[in-house]
Image (cartoon, rainbow, N blue to C red):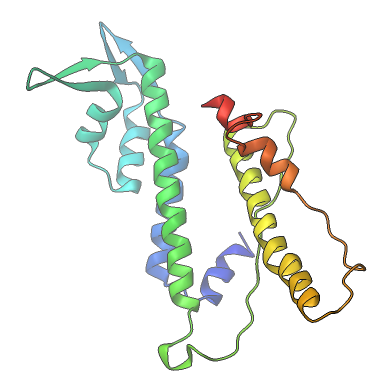
Length: 209
């Protein structure tokens, strides 16, 4: 926190935006504290205070969110029918909302950072330096599907960087008659193929699908 908060200020994030980020993160974390219980045949929120705080922080209407996470709505014969969900399903719905909110906030934050740090129009053709920060690879004893996709994205980014930089440079050397045999780099094509090959043989994603 001592390093993160000053970093927001350094790139020009306003105090109002920073407060919104803090509220959104707090609300997302509180989603995991919301409990549900069965009352008769209906699933209800068990801890109203935590649920109220979650809705307030995320700016979501409490009544509508309650309906969204405790019922299923189907259209049958032109009529909308609501049916109660199980406690387990309500927990999954609440986690899905947390994940969706986090994804939207993360996308907004990246867009906002790009807007703040972008060159003004009158300097669009100026020379500049960019830094590529690839996501951190992680290898846990048990990896979640999210971590799998993070690592897959990293492999794709690495392949893109390799193709643009090394493959491009070697092709330039070849056109200009320069010896490029001394250039060595590790290719991760086999890893990407293992993950996303559509067939012959199908990769991990094809099998999961």
